[in-house]
Length: 208
Length: 187
Image 1: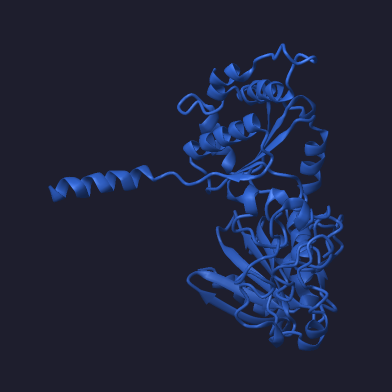
Image 2: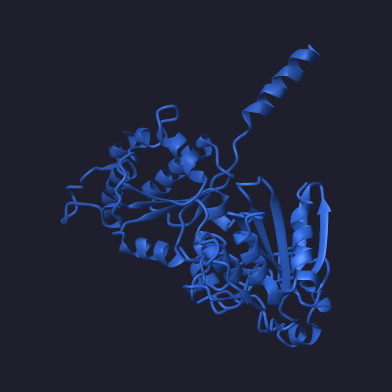
C-alpha cells in the first residue's frame, strides 16, 4: 500500500535496514538498533513520510533468537494516511546490551509505552525522561514477560497467610506450575542458569 | 422473627441471664444490619450493581443495603473482582481497619481463587491475605448466587460459625426449561 515508505527507508539508510516485507497491506522494516533514533526522526520529520501519530510500541521476547528482544513500533501518518511498522532487536541471551534510544522526544505519547516495555520485557530506553516501572510495583524483581520468567513465580508485597492460618491448601495443582504454558521447554533457552536456579524459584508462598 | 423466641431470661439463675441466648439475640441483630464496604476492582462490579439494584434487590431485603465507605463504620467487606499483588497491601489494611465483629465475602472467582489469572500479577484468592467467610464462585456469579452467599453468611452469623463457606451452584434455569420441554415432548 505504502511501499514507498519502505523504499525511502531503504534508499536513505541502506545497510541499516536489515529486512523489509509487506504482507496484507502491512509494511514492516527491521532496522539496526544503532539507527533506531535516526530512522524514527526521519519518519517523523520528513514531509514525504509525515508519521505524526504514534500508535503503539511493544516488546517481544524470542528466547531462541540472538538478539532476543524485539522492539516493535507502529506509526501512522494522518497527513498521508499510511502506516508503517518498524522493528529492531536488542539484547543477548543474558539481556546485555538490551537498550535502544527513546523516541519520546519525537512522539510524547511513547512515554508510557516505553515504560511498559521496560517494565515487562526489560528494554532500557536511552534518553527517556522517567524510566521506571509502570504496571508492576517498584519492589518487583525481573521482567515478567520474558519467556524465562517462571510461570508460577509470584512476588507478594505482603506475606501470604500460612496454610494453618488459612485452613486451606495453598499449593497449586497440576497442570499449573512453573512451566505452565511453555510447550517449547525451558531447557532451550538457558539450561545451566535455570537448572541451578530451579529450587530458588520453587513455589514458596510468602518468600519468593 | 422465630429466632427471638429463644431469648428467655431465666429468673431462677442468680445472675439472671444466659449468654447463649444473648448471643442468639446479637447474632439476629447483626445478621440483619450488615453495613457493607464494597471493595470493587473489576468486572464483577457490574454484577454487584445488578444485585443491589431493584430487579434483584439483593441487599436491601437482607438489611445489608447501606454502604459505608469507611472501613471503620462497616462490618461486611465485599471483595468484588481481581486483586492484584499491588493492591494486596491496601486490601489488608482496609480489613485491619474494620471493627470487630467483621466478615469478608469473596465475590466471584477472581476474589475466591484468582480465577484464570494464574500468574505473576494476581493474588490467587483473597484468603491468602485476609480471612474469608463466604466464597461465591462464578465469573461473574449470578445475582441468585450472591443472594445465596449473603443468606449463607447470615446463617453463619446467627450460628456464630466462623468456618468459611462456599455457595453451592443452583440448578440452571435454562436446564430446567430444557427438562420440561423434553418431558412435554415425551408425553
